[in-house]
Amino acid sequence: MGVISSSVKYSLSKAILVTVALLVAISFKSSGQSGSLATDFQKARQIAFEQKDYTSAIQLCKQILQQDPSYADAEIFLGRLYYWNGSPDSAIVILGQAFTQHPTNADAALALADILYFEKDYEQALLYAGKGLAIDPQSRELLTRKATILAASGNYKQAYLLTDSLLLTEPGNGQLQALRTQLRDYSYTSRVEVTYDYTYFDKQFNDAWHLAGISYGRQTKMGPVNARVSYANRFAKQGLQFEAEAYPKLSKAFYTYTSIAYSNDLPVFPTLRAGLSLYANLPKAWEAEGGVRYLNFDSDVWVYTFGAGKYIGNFWFNGRMYFTQGNDDLANAYSLTTRYYLKRADNYASVILGWGVSPDDRAQAVRLNTTSKLNTFKAGAGYRFTLNTRHVLGINGTYENVEYLPDTKGNQVNISTLYQFRF
Image (cartoon, rainbow, N blue to C red; front, side, top):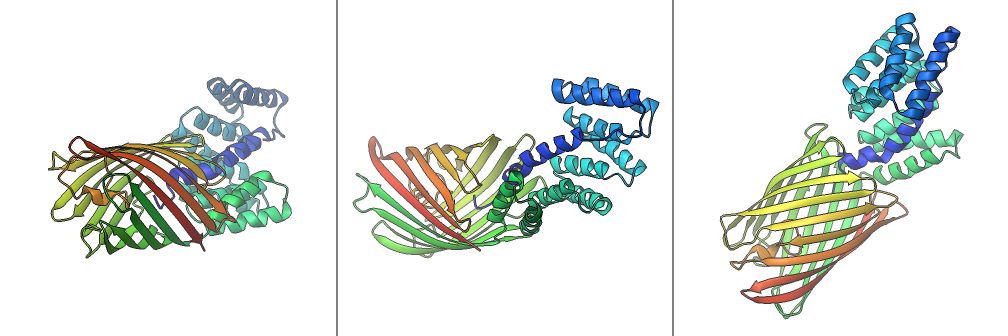
């Protein structure tokens, strides 16, 4: 997809935020409190950080606050404990009370910004980060947190400028350096992309297929938009296709995919191709999709698609199904894709296994213009990487075994290449 999913954005800075949050929590001061309460507070932190027994730590913090309701550090820590123990609503309520009671306590604002960030309420998280900075304008933790929230909410340029300014006074901070590198990749709002696909057939066709395209894409407030012109030489004919696509955001949890393409060069391209999908960002780094695809050749082809994706560490797994309506002879399609991300979102190796022909495959979707059952198995791998942040290169190779006539199979190999320039 030509979009950065919110799951990828969320993972860009989560590790940085967790680490800093823990360091801040550990560094709470207990000055001005009795020795007994200070000892109990230190014990609660030890139970939480060393034993991971958040329930016992919560009870101990409650006991401290019963004896001294003004113990701000204990109340703030209690809010964090509730979040770590799986009760985000309670955590937000407690921290909100703490900030109301102690409006000059920057740590309370920081804790609220942390938890609201993890709950993907970026607007409120940014609000409390700003309130904390109004109290302590030089706070490195709050400034770093603000940059992280800006990045997660898609304000890459602001986040990059803030991170860059922080590094001027802290050039050896490896976490900030990594965040700046990631943000620099996403601070570009426009891109030009050139692609070329070559398909070789051992039996089905005498001539290889060629597909080339050039596109311009831009990141907007509503989401990414893209315009593409494609040229193809296949079936011993040539043709052009004009296409537009967008990924409008509906809310924090939902966004859509929309596309439409037209060509006057049947059968090189379908006369009309359109798509619509709804994506949902789910808890625990899951994403779900449901949508429809339409292709018009000499007749209409309607395809319904369902998919689910999951991030596990540096891996991304995605399974998709395509069900074709009203044509029992046209096989359904299934695919499983795995990516392993390296340093950046545009640096990954991928592997794909599939059955059938996908209407989203620009190089092969034209094969859906048939009355034959498309029993197809495919396997492929690819690699995508960046050069100097502005340049993205990619190559993919796919092998397919196709039953293109009853009891007649052929092999084909597809090589796809990509170059993208971002600015």
